Length: 323
Image 1: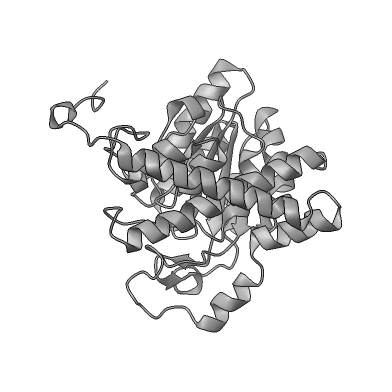
Image 2: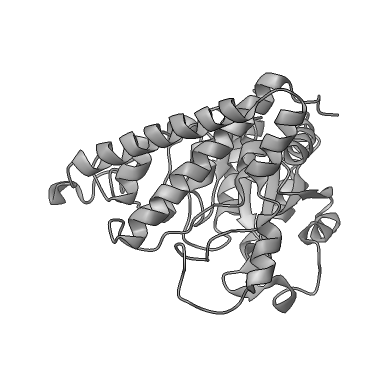
């Protein structure tokens, strides 16, 4: 079983969640002001999942992400400056301004990329997990995907192969209840995506995705199994996105009620976590506010860096496209 998180681990998870939330809130404002081109899929509300999983990973462990991928890279150590520069399409971005919001990657951090194609990440993570097994150094791969992506053939093929070869891999389903604008009940006959795991010969675990400690403990056990050669786990985190599918207010479609949103916002993962840390006398209100203030200052410095960065020169359009 995974050991209980130490005080330092708890504070680290808090910092990761605040970094994600602050980045996303500021990015949302920039998008509304027309300063970020293209679609922007925000991770606000789901921070406990990225923080709970990524706390266990090193730069030598690999992840694949989704179109809602800023939180994953930030939780894995991404810096604000290159992140905002990528969203702005600037040459100093993680992908030199060519990837934008949905394709951020960084090999040095073990981030194989966010992906605009629903369900595209799991097969890529299978390849990474296969390399981890071949190298035999105890590293693992984690793939993040949503409830809608679990209907895709790419997910099922990846799950089958990962289980067959007992790969060091964890499938993390961030079930926020909607595939774009479609409620889960309208696209799946099951309530728990984790119920699909036994069909591939792997454990399926359901966890409260608004509880960072619950995610940390479940992810720790899944990664322990993976690194020990016991094969993959399907970890389903029940969570919720506070903003719309795209941007802050999206396209104005009525598919969620105000009551539903308010009910989930009562379980804000950061507020719940801060209350827990206060009860444990690990983090008081003043120190928590200081973390938020320090992070906001760093985020705004990252925005200034991005705004001052040059646009890519057209002559480098095909650089890095081919190996």
